[in-house]
Length: 175
Image (cartoon, rainbow, N blue to C red; front, side, top):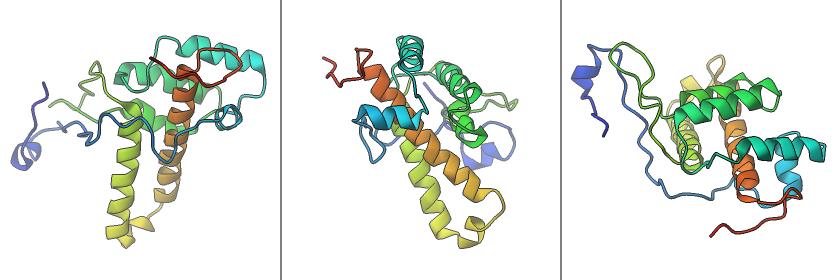
């Protein structure tokens, strides 16, 4: 169970609360991928061998029930294979965004829905930028937002691979 800090408590610590997912059951959104070609293109996979290797790597992961520690492993694999850039990688390794009083990442073994998390983080950040045009024009913000979009595309492509049980990527519903 997470302990939420008040604003007063947060001023005296390095701790930060985890992002609160509003719709933890969300499995589809505007980034949902339902076509094999789009999933392959999103993850820059050109050969069946690459697809099979990725599917084998992902067999123990569920993007709708994953921990930050697991998401770090998945993100690292994508980053090291030049599938995502540093900004998108940041979304994977930051997970829920919780930190303890010493500034160390916490709640890294808590399972959550990464599809919902990534989508809600993006929506919240875009709403924030709409309310603060001065921030929207700041250096690095467009790249950060692009990384958030890329992370959403990647997590949904990964979900497609996880949910397809055959190497040829045809879609099958999970029971």
